[in-house]
Image (cartoon, one colour):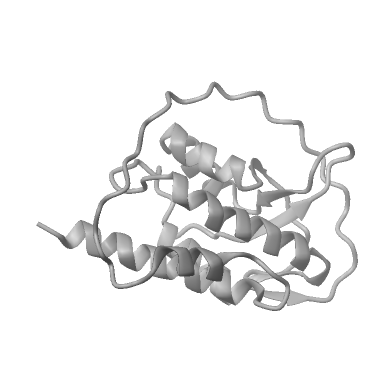
Amino acid sequence: MALRYDFDIAVVPGAMPLALWRDQAVVDALTRADPIVQKYFRDSGFGMATFDSGAPPDRFPAADEPVRADIIGKLTDNVQAVDIEGLNWGGFDLRAFLTYLGGATPIDMPAAPEPKVMPEPPKPEPPKVDVAEPDLDLGFDREELLRAMQPSKRKGIAMVVLALGVILIGIAALMALP
């Protein structure tokens, strides 16, 4: 069964806004994933809990749009530090998640109720891994791509999703090399 990658923004009093998954199966998949994958999502602003704003599938409350854009920007920035090749994603499909990000649209709706979530227990830090950047020319200027991925309200979420797609294409090209 395919995972539903919908997430909602929850504001817990005294804490930063947090992206929480609507589908417990996504939380379960990420719980099975390698610690570095879990850290990637936590560092990007995701919690490993569920919350449902009441928005229909593939939609999100319009009021959440600025916070969602910030979180998606963090996903983009943080992917630079993760060598995703060969990691166990626990059944989480990164391409399906990117497809969801590109297709999710806002909907005007009343404010969601305050989430009843317990803070996550602190996770042990995974061992530091020195990830060397490969010396490959993938046909694009890395600095230009990084500048294009910087979140801004004018560029919108679509540009961030597009940049993530370019990164995945580059990774796929690396994986295809002998």
